Length: 457
Image (cartoon, rainbow, N blue to C red; front, top):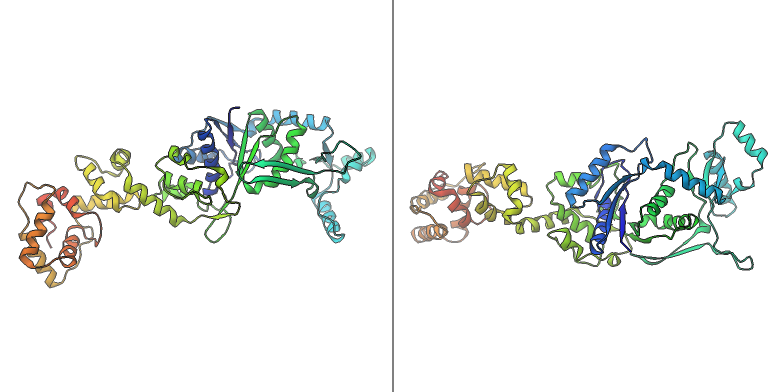
């Protein structure tokens, strides 16, 4: 069997870190099983779905390193769903209902007062032809419900309404269909809810594994029944835990909370996002993977916790710094050129400053310091100013090499008696305008003697 997975968001907003988690779970599972990845847009809600959101989702996935084998749009597949509806009607498991929302709400309240679960009572199944004709003459259009089955064909046996499956993430799972209302599959206006197109597409596209958030566990019980009603074997299901904000709030495409776009614009590296999104809330140690191939080696869906996990953006910066500190010049070169960092000094400059960066864009600040001197010159006491005047008089002559900083500070120590912080801090402030940063032994050769002298207070 070829492993085939799918990521099926609604293009009604920009995806957030929780959506990316689902996409990554599917992508990494496909990588580990040499499978296929289908990008499927659940855009049957024509009013809210927008192509610009679909395009932005694809852009975000590509940025993360996810490149679908095929991209599908449910809005282009209505003929297939219409045919499935006719099959379900012919099998007498899809039935017309004429209740208004107000009538349904009243019935739920009545059931609650009687101590009964507020599920649909299947009153539509008892309508006479005359009642149906009366509703139609009043202009009512039906919505269509799927008749949830019991799984007992022997009338002498008690009704069995439980659906069981071995979840890829959660292990043995059970949903009791008796606790659910028969789901509406088709609205009054003929449009489809999520449930039926999802099942039909999974059948038609040969999806072998459905990996999604655990808010779909109950849906899975219903969908397994629809798979069987359509004569298809259900795929393997896996439901991972959801991510929340640090304060425990859910994530939403509508609010833009922790959107991939906002993280990208904040200078976070894609592998920092991917590493934390895939590994948080699992038994794996959360560490920055160099690429998705390395991350796939640490990915095991069964290692995922069953409880929700909080996504802390501060952890992203820790991972981001790790990636910066180990990024080769070859990986950074093109992005540095975009920032205006190029030429013979670019590579030694990058190797000198990368260990002090939170984001790659931070390199530009150090490049300006290297080329133009401190952007905000420091203020010095009279004593430190006298010290610096004497120190710059001791600056070695050219040519400079990798030992110039050691040679220079050795002369300064011998001449002034200063050592440690009283010696190094005034020099750092004079040369860079900052109290911390890259090793001056790496920066000084790049500044050159003339550029160093120009920083003399």
